[in-house]
Amino acid sequence: MQGSSVHDIHSPKQEHCSRLCAPLCFRGTLVRMSSTAHGARARARVEVTAAIKEEARRQLAEDGAAKLSLRAVARELGMASSALYRYFPNRDDLLTALIIDAYDSVGEAAEAARDAAGGTGPVPRWTAVCEGVRRWALGHPHEYALIYGTPVPGYSAPRTTVPPAARGAMVLIGILRDAHRGPGLAGPALPAELRPEAVRMAADLAPDLPPEVVVAMVAVWAQLFGLIGFELFGQFNRVVEDRDTFFRHAVGHLAHTVGLR
Image 1 (cartoon, rainbow, N blue to C red):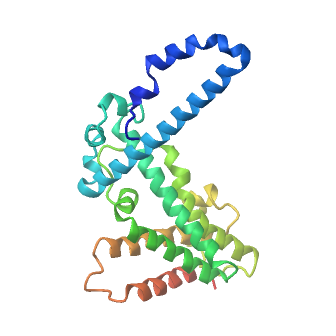
Image 2 (spheres, rainbow, N blue to C red):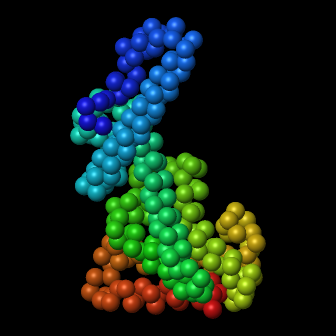
Image 3 (spheres, helix red, strand yellow):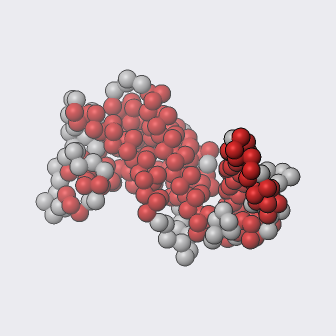
């Protein structure tokens, strides 16, 4: 990124040069030159976008999401605000990009933990995934706070955040699905007053699972992040000493809650 800017990427000089080179198209030269220039612009855009998001994450860690400022990001990167707006037109667009990245990152951690557990039984795989999510959270506390902490005032997440947000849950649902197709699940009976359609996950993410399992999964999903949040934000200080063992025991209990045996 150093030594270049957004203005370099779309400069009038380059456009003028392209017009002057037009006659070269008969020898195929323009095609090669245009392809090279397009590739350079694409790479530059990726690099600048990554730098903007990295600086924004640094500011999140320092000041919190509510104080995130495009002007401050631009200033730290030595960019004009008008140049940064070409990448992220407003603060909410930048926040959305950071939120999607965070959800994808925790989702990747969950998937990697599942894959590392290999062909073990459902409870060990479930435990491995939960521990993978916890490790990610402890290593990325500010990104965790962005997606599972206090809502950012004035920000409303668009629907584009929904698939990344479901990524981690789908890993655990996959374990439940495998168990349901194999040895079966021993989930608790659904209370008569709680209709299955009251929990949207049953229809949206896991219509093939018993409703009582999906309802339990929603509660367990909330409890998992409650455990992680309590540890991350200090509520376990002077309460839980051996947190690794405690967490493993707790997520084992959650596995039983959703019917894994």
